[in-house]
Image 1 (cartoon, rainbow, N blue to C red):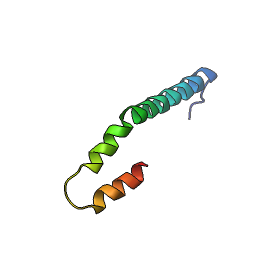
Image 2: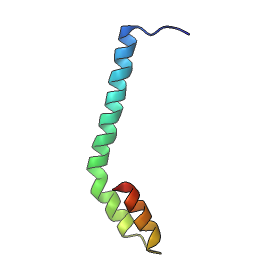
Image 3: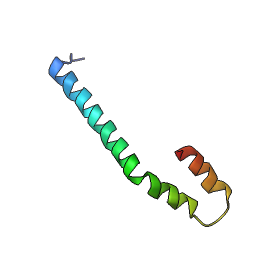
Length: 56
């Protein structure tokens, strides 16, 4: 197995931080829209409650 250099480790860490920042930003941007979507679903009352409990 090839060894990782310091430069490669820095790139991997920065890439992971960028992915986390993008996911966090998308979560905060669409947080209210997704919760409203699942609250307004037609059908039984049990499924939206389960999904909302997982999102909160």
